[in-house]
Image (cartoon, rainbow, N blue to C red; front, side, top):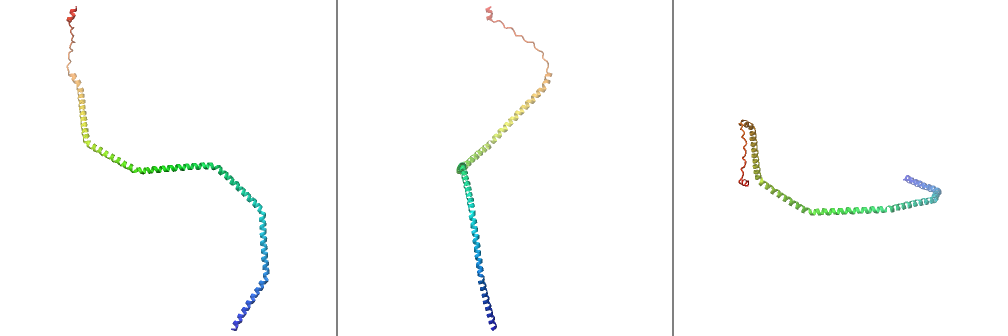
Amino acid sequence: MKKLALLALTAAFSLVSANGFAAEKAAASAPAIHKAKKAEKKKVASAQKAQAAKADASAPKAKKAKKHVAKKDASAQKAQAAKADASAPKAKKAHKHAAKKHAAKKEASAAQKAQAAKADASAPKAKKAKKHVAKKEASAQKAQAAKADASAPKAKKAHKHHAKKHAAKKEASAAQKAQAAKADASAPKARKKLPLRPRKPARRRPLPLPSNSSADAV
């Protein structure tokens, strides 16, 4: 127990001694720290002064350069403005042309839409009329077909009669040709068989007797 108390006292004394030593050391080094801080402040102040002097020295050049840049910018702006003024009529003309073109397109589109609407409106009527015409044509075709069917036997009969007539004519012509050929072939033989006839003397016509009127005149 005593040993523990002794150890505690020794530790406490050591701690107090260490604190006192540190305090003495800090008190001894305080002036040096203060001096170092002061020197640092002076150094910073000198650097700031040098930078300010440098800035003051370069200010005219910077001002001159800034002025030159401002003049250059002003000249560029003037040139651009002059160019814009020069190209304004062309731009205005182009804009006017584009506006006219746009208006023409708009009108054409409106006309197309109106025409399409008109076509859509007249489509049912046109369809109905087309259907009516188709029905009329179909009826006409049916009537014509019925007429053709009705006249087909007559036409067939007439064609048959015409064919028979033509065949009869052909046969008659062939028979006539054959008969003529036969006659031509037998003519020399018939001429050869006929006897020669003596020629008769030519008869003289008697002179006319004088009439009574002519005798009285003598």
